[in-house]
Structures are given as C-alpha cells and as structure tokens.
Length: 147
Image (cartoon, one colour):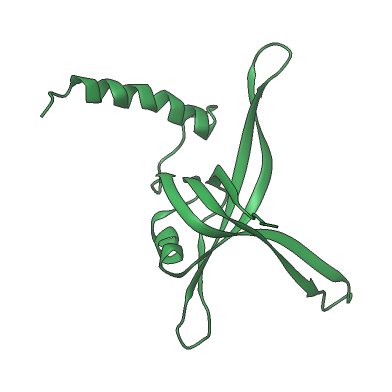
C-alpha cells in the first residue's frame, strides 16, 4: 500500500527566521520558521474578515535554510511544501511525555519578501494587498512593447 505525507500551504512569517548550525562535523544549517495560515470570510454584514487558522513550525535544512535566514523577515509571504513530522520528548521538570507537530520543508518559495521598515497597508490583510498589486503589474506588462 502506498503512503503519502505531503503538506503545502502559503502563509506569512510570524517572527524573524532563526538560523542554527548542528554541532556535527559538517555543520549543517537549520532554519526555524513560524508561518501563519490565514483564512478570509465575511461576517453577517458582508465585511471581509481575516482569521489566523494555524501557525506552523517549519524546519528548513541545509543551503535552503541559509537562504531563508538571509532573505526572509517578519511578515514575508512564503509557499512551503514538505512533510509532517512529530517531535516527542519527556519533560525534564514534570516527567510528562510531550510532543509537537512540525513541517520539514522540502521546498520554500519566497512569494513576497518584506524589507526591514516596510509596512503593509493598514487594515489590509497581507494576502489581499498582494491580490491588489497583481493587476497593476499585469497592466505594466501589457504596456511594454513586444520584443
């Protein structure tokens, strides 16, 4: 029987990436990301509302992890593809068994990199502001002469 463990989503970083290097001989990079997935809906009066539905813990290993740490900042929009994994450990204080789900990224696409000091338009969710920018880009492309 075949098995499939794939997870793909688009979301915004909720904090700056954290880069660590493993103490092993090859010093492999590990970048930790926290990405929020938002869901848009309308309330009873028809007003658009954005709800954060889930915040994912992401691990990005090796050179892709170094690139994430170098280019991404708080608020950057990314597409993540990977697999779900579970960390399990025993709490040192209480001795209770603990676990957390995480995503081990196989591919991270930078959809919109937020520059330091750059602010999102007030009151407009990030995904909505992206949708408004797209038609303007298409219009600029249409005005360019064909080569």
